[in-house]
Length: 307
Image 1: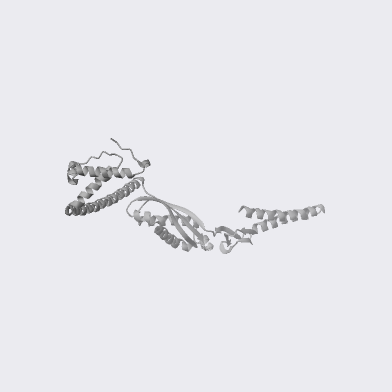
Image 2: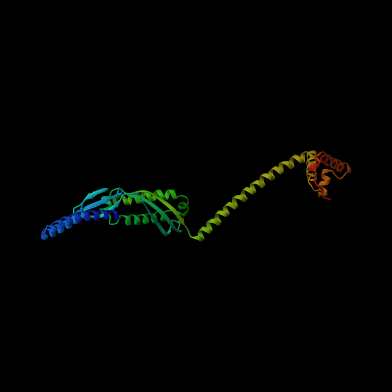
């Protein structure tokens, strides 16, 4: 708007300057009356032409009214109007516009107060309707967006709102676009930015999620223990029918234990009886086997044993 006023002022100065130059020439010719007339005439002409010239930006549409009636839409570029008779009450911006709106402390369908922030992307398709069908289309679309958001929140469960923002955005777009279509405005999209819930409810939902994860972990652990117990049961049946296999398994377990760094192994007496290691022959055979294995190892890999 500043560049437009500067251009009009420039035109006024140029025309009035030419008139003053002519008036000065007439004054120098001793024609004082004609000089005054020329000065006044140049002033009026400069004022009329500068008032008639208008410039619209590439994204602007000027709504021209003539004697209170709609005349035309002008722009972009330079155009002329009739001063006093024509009037431009609105310059309509036809670019895509982003408007932020919100709904505070609005109850959902399950009576939970929420604060919702959203952004509306819209543009004017028909500047004539936007200027003539609604008093202030920017304020009107803002209020239409807020009321639509409150209506959608009141008909939606909190869980649906937290999980399905895309669905809410599409629904809002349809509702707002239907309301603003008579005003010549098209809604491009609606984006729900954030949904804020009370802190107490947020903590409760967090605890609920943690409890659910713990329940799932306990279920998985219980199922694992059941599977292990089943395998142990199958192994017990195998050992019950084959005492030799049980004896060899017990020998192997004790052997693996003695292979560790420590040479002290505490074995219950019942296990000794089961593995038949109470006699000297069993212990001698086990000790000789361990000693032979250690002798076969390289010297650099010897491990220290405790007493």
